[in-house]
Amino acid sequence: MRLSAATLGRLAPGVERFAYDRKTQAAGIVHFGIGAFHRAHQAWYTDRAMDAGDRDWAILGVSLRSAGVAEQMNPQDGLYSVIERSAAGSRARVVGAVGRVLVASREPEAAIAALAAAETRIVSFTITEKGYCRAPDGSLDPALAGSGSVFRFLAEGLRRRRDAGLPGLTLLSCDNLADNGRVLERLLADYCARHDPALGEWIAANCACPATMVDRIVPATTETDRAEAAALLGLDDAAAVMTEPFSQWVIEDRFAGPRPGWEAVGAQLVADVAPYETAKLRMLNGAHSALAYLGLERGHAFVHEAIADPVLRPLVERLMRREAATSFAAAPGQDLAAYADALLARFANPALAHRLAQIAMDGSQKVPQRWLATLAAHQARGERCPAILAALGAWLRHLRGDGAPVDDPRAGELGAVVRATGLRPAAEALFGVGGLMASGWRPDEADLAAISAAA
Ligand code: NAI
Ligand code: CS2
Image 1 (spheres, rainbow, N blue to C red):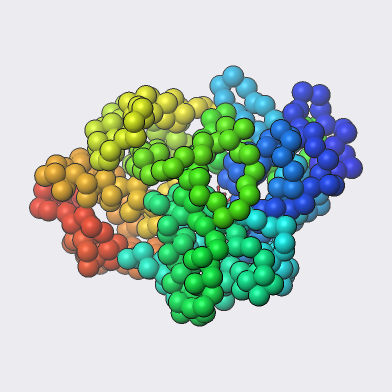
Image 2 (tube, rainbow, N blue to C red):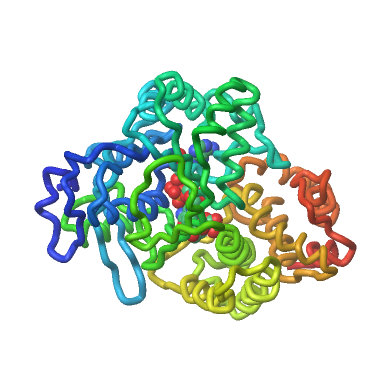
C-alpha cells in the first residue's frame, strides 16, 4: 500500500507527521527543480513552519523537463517522507508541504499561471548549478537560456503579474552558487534586457532575490533506501528522501513581500549571508569535491570511506583549515575551526551512503566557487594551496576519462583538451582570465608542476 492522503492514518507508530489541515492551505510558493534536496530542506522547513501555525505556504513543485518526480509524488497527493540517518539509527517524518508537482515542458501554461497567481509570493529554485545557463565567464548564455529554461517561464509569469497589477515576487535561489541571489538577479536582468527591457525594469523595482546559504547532505535516493522507507513507514513511498540529522539555512532578510516564519523552525535570517556561504562552499563543498575526485581514484565509493583514508584525511583537513578557512574574512563569532570539526564528523556519518560519483558530477559548474576562488585569494597573497592543486590534478584526470564516466555538461569540450594536450598544458588552457574556465586564478610554474604530478 502506498503513502497518500487516504492512507496517512496507516502510518507506522513513531513516524512523525505534519498536523495542519492541508486542504485549507493556499500555495504561496512555487518551487523549480523539485529534486531530493528541496524535499529534505526548504519543504521540510516550510512544513514545520506551517505546523507552528503559519498558513498558506503550500508548495507547488515544478520540474522543468523530467516527469519522474511528478510520477513519484502526484499519486501520493504530494506526500513523502524525510528520513534522517545516523549511526544512532533512522527517524522519519512525513511532510505535507508539497501540494502537487507539474512538469513545465508538458504543461507550460500551468507553470506560467502558477507564477502569475495572486497567492504566489515566493518562487524558489534548486535547479542545479547548470540550470542557471551561464557561460564560463558567468554571463547568461543565450543559447542555453532558450525556450525550455527557467528564465523563459519566469519572464512570462512575471509579465503576466505586472499586467494584472499584482505585486512582485521574492525569487529565492537555493543552489550552491557563490552569491546565488545576485547571480539569479543579474542573469534574469540579462535575459530581460534581450527579450523585454521594460519587464526588466519592473522586476528590478518589484522583485527581490535574497542570497541563501543552504546546507544538508541529501544523497540521491536508491531502491534500497525506498525499501528502508517502506519498512519504517509501513507504507511504500516512491518519493522518500534520505538525509543527515544536520540542517542549516541562512537567508538574506530582503524579501519583496511576506514569507513563512522559517526562523521559528531553525533558519537564520541575516543581513549578510556571504561569510556563511563562502565558508560552506569553500570548506564543505571544496572538501567534498576533493574527496570525490581523489577518493574515486583511490577506489572508494562513498564519502565516509574516503574521509577515513589515512592519505586523504590530512589532505582534506589541510584544504579546509589552511586553504579554504584562511581565504576570506569570517563573520564576528563565526568559528571556522569548529566548523571544520563538525564537517569532518558529518562526512564520517556511516549511515548516509553518500556516493562520491554524485559529487563528481558537473565539476565544470562546481570547481570555480569551490576551489578557484580560494586559489585566487591565496595567490593574491603570494601563497600556494597544495591540497587544492592535488585535487585539481585528480579532476583533470577524471575529465580525461581515467575513471568513471564523466557526467558534466562540458565533458566533451574539456575532456578533449586534456586528452589532446596532457595535464599541464590543459591546466594552462583552462585557468586564467582568458582560459576555458575563465578564472581569476592563473597557475604559475610551481602550480602546474603540482597539478600534473603523478597521482
Ligand atoms: P536532484 O538531481 O534530485 O534534483 C535536481 C533538480 O534540478 C531536478 O528537479 C532536475 O530536473 C533539475 N535540473 C537538473 N538539470 C537542470 C537544468 N539544466 N535546468 C533546470 N533544471 C535542472 O538534485 P538535488 O539533490 O535536489 O540537488 C539540486 C541542487 O540543490 C544541487 O545542484 C545544489 O545546487 C543544491 N543542493 C543540494 C544539496 C544536496 O546535498 N543534495 C545540498 C545543498 C544544495
Ligand atoms: C555536494 C553537495 O553534490 C555535491 O556536489 O557537494 O550537494 C553537498 O552535499 C551539499 O552542498 C551539502 O549541503
